[in-house]
Amino acid sequence: MADYFLGALKALERRSKDNVLIFSDVLTERLDALVESMIYQKISDNDYLKTLELYYKKYQRFENHKGMYFCILRMQQIMQLKNVRKRQENWHYLEFTSDVDSEVQEFLKAHKSYYQNAIYEYARVFLLILLAVTIAILVLSVLVFQVPFLIGWLVSIAFYAGVWFFGKQKGIDFLMEKQIQKLYPDLDTLCQRLDCCVMKKQKKRKKNFLKDLLTSSQSIKKC
Image (cartoon, rainbow, N blue to C red):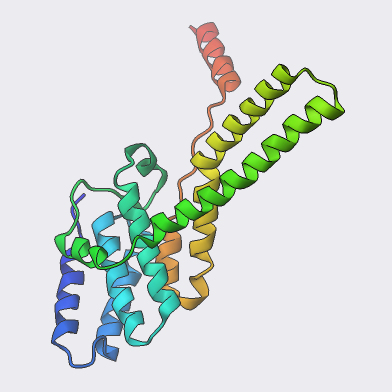
């Protein structure tokens, strides 16, 4: 899909640069009106990135540092998702495109990789805890339950690999998302509503093989 809202967002950004007081009440009202029209509409990643950039500048004017931090984290997260095609289908109201707006790229280059640094920190702590638990399982299985060392070692390695795989795929991202959502109270109501909508994952349809089998057999009988 085309970046439907990007043109209007850029026009609003140009007006804010021409204004002596960045994000005056009039410009804030126009941003709110644009954001309200985005809610429950499928928008492109560039639309949302530019929206977050504008909110960052608005929060910067009012010295809302937590709001600014939220915008940077969410923008960096979306940029990371642009490189992982298999995860892009999880979001119902956000459509990923192959290109990135040049102004957004320049904006992000001027900031540290807060999102990636937080992911690394979560992964480091998770690995340390997992390593301690794995060693404890090995010690208990060998010394307490009298399991042969080789079997205990193999069980421990399997446990470590399985938990790390699950944690890397789901757990760390889940914790990071919860950390981002903790900043919701510091956001404008419309910004929060839009984020809840855009980042809402669509439910995966569960296949009911038994039901399909029964339906197929009934169809065959009718024939």
